[in-house]
Length: 196
Image (tube, rainbow, N blue to C red; front, top):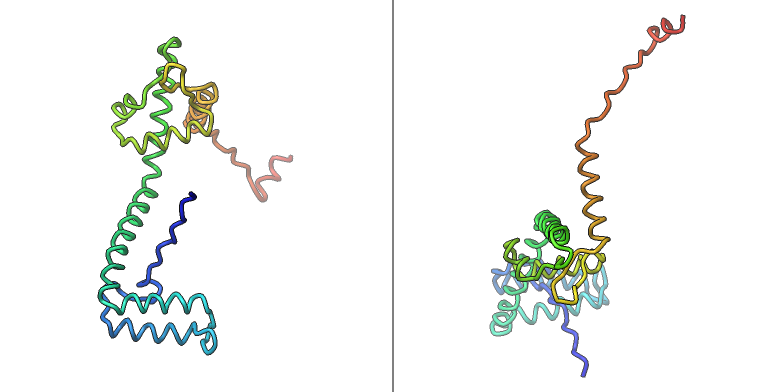
């Protein structure tokens, strides 16, 4: 039997432009303002779907028992949103971990062509990151074709992975080269003196 899709969480406080600590009076007042704006027949912005949403939000938040149940979901929603934001902020860290991880695969391949693979547990130990982070980067490497699973089990770098490392190194070296100083070309009357 197919799994039913969960409806996305709707932030009723944001929808009604309320603080989560809003009093019942504030909820009623802001609901009236929103209802006037979105009412499908008399509203300024006539939006039946939005009107249904704000009505549902109002009915939920004005009832103490329903609001308490909603608030527990709201706290979880905010926590998950905060985790997502922290994860997005970790992009630079992920880049560094991904590079170190690919370097480990490269190093192992160079060290032993007979046993070129590295196990996931060893990666966790060497990189000191969570299994979820390792799993994410392995997914990325596999999708790019940079690693493959050996018949003996561990993962090893592919030719495409080696090419990626070499390309990265060439870019580093090019960035470290000093640029050639520009030649100063005289302008105006000074240029005429070169012509004679």
